[in-house]
Structures are given as structure tokens and as C-alpha cells.
Amino acid sequence: MDAPSNIDPVTAQSGGDVVHWLTNGTRDQRFIDNIFAEMCIRLQQADIPVKRASLHILIHHPQWLGARIMWEDGMREAEIARVDYDVQERSEYIGSPANEIHDGVTEVRENLERDPALGRKHAVYDEMRAKGLSDYVAWPLYHTLGKRHIVTFATDRPGGFDAAHIAGLLKLLPVLALVSEIRVKNRLARTLLETYVGSHAGELILAGATRRGTGTTVRAAIMICDLRDFTRISDNWPRDDVIDLLNGYFDAMSEPIARHGGEILKFIGDGLLAIFPLSQPSACANLLHAVTEARQAMTALNEKNSETGRAPLNYGIGVHVGDVMYGNIGSRSRLDFTVIGPAVNMASRLEALTKQLGKTVLLSRAFADFVESDFDLERVGEHPVRGFNDPIELYAYHG
Figure 1 (cartoon, one colour):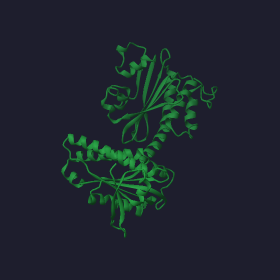
Figure 2 (cartoon, one colour):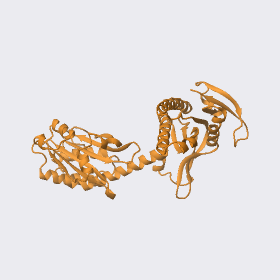
Figure 3 (spheres, rainbow, N blue to C red):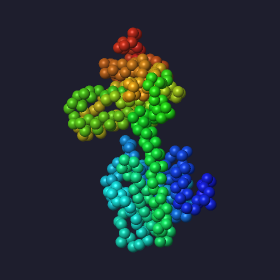
Figure 4 (spheres, rainbow, N blue to C red):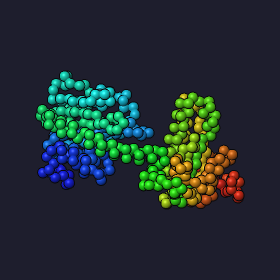
């Protein structure tokens, strides 16, 4: 395989040069998978015969326990695979090198050329033997505060890695730990912001929008959804069942919203607030498509819940469109990145009216004007809305 254009094949003849590159040459590289792939290529150029390498990172994510970054000879980019939380209960983990290291072992070394009957028993070793690899080593990669991740290397060199190769690889570990921790922490910050405030707000915060009172005016379609009779459910159902019900409900509502370009700004108990900025030409239509899919998902969820004796979940959705202030609100030390304004209040009032009027989804006239020609809407008439002087013309959507 050709070396990357920025590798000098003359100077890249020792592990020390790879250490120097990791220390000084990766400042402008944002992603650890790219750094890891280039590091492996540089190791080959430094006469350390790496044929396969992997980096296993534990991360804080609502869906995944970690990520595995895998590089093999001939690859210009490493492959990233997400690792589920239940992996530790599966055969792919039990008895694996990762299992051993997480249990406290400081090195796993396996001679893949010897009789398999004499070696460790796990499918990963059989896979490496089938690929012609001769030697394998795995080490913990230590981050600060006792965090342990894993790095592995394998070779197809007859006789495996020699002592100098192992020494060169070990020399990399402290620097690789520092370089990887910086990138993992950066990714962690981004992931946590996306998880708790949404992707768009997270990007703004990372870009420096952290001063209280700062924000911008955004014209958007606003959607507020709330469960019906949640107090009764939470009082009468076991805690774990209530959490499971809420998570199922939020999945049913949230995934269509994200799929159609909306952004959920917050969950409020059993309710949610989402916006579809009108900078997207089809924002209002997208919101109703999301509502349609969410209703279908809720029907499926209720059918599933009925099989276990759970009562169906009912909900109301209020939708309006208007200008909102989008930015930082809160105390000096605790901020919330959200939207405020009369348009948000109107959506909230319409959600409250859904129960009174016996409609699941209520739309304001202002919103209906954007979609009336493309969607079948039911005119509900004019109704007083608390906090607003004049009655508001309302529409119901049954799609």
C-alpha cells in the first residue's frame, strides 16, 4: 500500500517518528478513526509489520456502550462499528480479549501459529488464523480518572512480532492515549449536547452561543405534544412500567420528527416541544408528515401494550406557526437553549384544547394556510384561547 502523501518514507523508519507525528502532527485532525488509520500506515512505513489493528472505546451514549475502530492492511480509512449495551452478555464478548482486559488483565498476547488446541478459545482467534495472521497483542489504553479502553495489533509476519516491534508499539501507547482522549472527549461533548438539547442547538452551543440572553428570531412551525391521563398512569403503574411506557411514547413521536427535519428542543415530563424552521421550504408539510407517522407508530405501540394488559396511551398535539426567540434563557449559572414567544404559547394552548374539543391534533389558521391545499383538514371553527384576546380559527388533522 502506498504511504500517505505527507509521510516521508526516509524519516519514517523508526517507531519514534510515529510518536513524534502523533504528538505534533495531528493537531488539525478532528477524528480519531482517521488518526488511527494513518498511524497504522506510518507504523508499516517504520518497519513495524502491523497487518490489523483495532481501537475499542467506551462512550457515553443513550444507545451504545462503545465503538470499535478497525483497520486492516490496504485500508485508507478505518471502519467504525457501534457496540450495543448488551454485548457483554453475548458470545462475541465472553472470553474475548476485551473481556480479559476489562477484567483487569494488562496484556493479551496470542501466538496464532501454534496449535489452536494449545491457545485461547474464542472465535476472534479463529478468524485471525483464517486470515493468515501469526501474532496478536492487546493492551489497555488508559485515559484520565481510571478510564480503560483497548488497543490491539496483529501481524502476519512469520514468527510474529519481535521484541523491537513490541517495544515500538508500547512506546506509542501513552501518546495514543492522550491523542485519543482529546478526540473522544470532543465527540462526547458533541454527543451529549445532541442528546440533551438537539443537534442544531448543540452546534450553536459548541460554536460559542453560551451567553445568557443571546439568541436569534426564527420563524418556525411549533409542535407541542402531551400525554393524556399521565398522572393516573404514574400513580397506578409500577415505576419501571411507567418509564417504559414513556420511552415507547417518546420513540414513537420523536423518530418521525427527526426523520422529517424537525428538532426536539425539550421533553417536559410527558410532553415534548419541537420546531420545524421555515428556512426549510416544506417545513409545515414535513411537520404533518411527521405527525402522520407518529400516529401510526402510536397505534402500533398501543397494540403492543394491549398484549401485556396496558391501557392505550392517548395524547394531544397543538401546532402553530410564527416567530420565536431561539436562544439562551436561565440563571447566571444554569441555562436552557430553547424557544419562547407568543407563538409557543399558542401551540401550548392549542394542545390543551385538544382534550376539550375531542380532537387529537389541532392546527391554528396561520399554520393551516401553509398546508390546506395539500392536506385534508377539518375546520373546527373559532374558539377562545386563554391568553389571547380574539378567538382563533382552528382545524383538526386526522391523517
